[in-house]
Length: 190
Image (tube, rainbow, N blue to C red):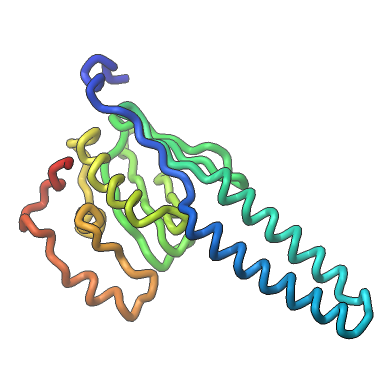
């Protein structure tokens, strides 16, 4: 465990779900709810009530999942919590590499690779619920607290506001982007 005095000047950073996700899910849920209510009123029937209740319950679970989502980076560890998964964390000193992966499960994730010597498996963090600005802050902050870690080019590009596409046909154009300083070292913390 590293000494805490060496990290005193660096704060911890917590990332939660962005407001856009709540609006997007709420809009879709509202549309479906109104559609079912109009159908029930128009046909003077309660046959669609079970389907409407299922939609409302599913919407509640999605909002609960979004509310419980949390990614916390401290000078000592990185931890990730969701509603349906237990808390996963890794010490900064055990971290070997960080990369952005698209196309797996989850489809858009940040993968934390531990050192082989510690015997832990990689931690995949779903980053779709995070705001673009939070991802940029994460890409600026994490290299500051973990200078020994290898970061892939996609992660370094996030610090400049260039986010990898979740659509594979656009991924090739993203992969052609260059990190502005042309070096493999992490960008400077702003």
